[in-house]
Image 1: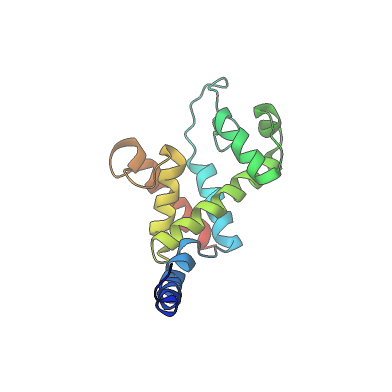
Image 2: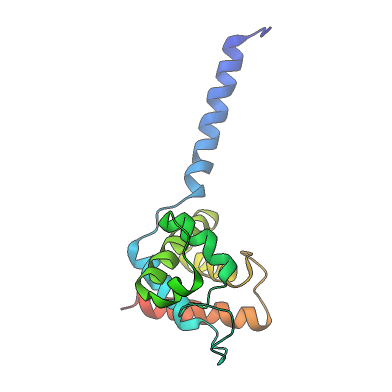
Length: 155
């Protein structure tokens, strides 16, 4: 039995209003221009293995096991790696869909710091983590993505 229903209601209201800013911060809107710049930056920064049978697909060098979930999420159907590879337009659509989600998450996490968001999303793209890309190959890769992103945004 609730002894003080008004107090309980007041607590619920206060907690709800206290969480609203946090919820709003979780997913920030990202512009089409930002998404396009990020997608192009990832494409340009993609490691080139010089091996046509490297197991990575499209100009973005995506792993086949990643494609299943991404195409199902973004296209509502799974594509094979070959279908993804053979359609640059579909590959760009899927990468754009995923990067819209990731940039939105990162913009919320970084209080709308665009470059920090790009760094986090680029690190996630390469490693699956938003942080930890501050040395070695991953740091070089993230910096390359940021440079290409800034070039795209300045156009």
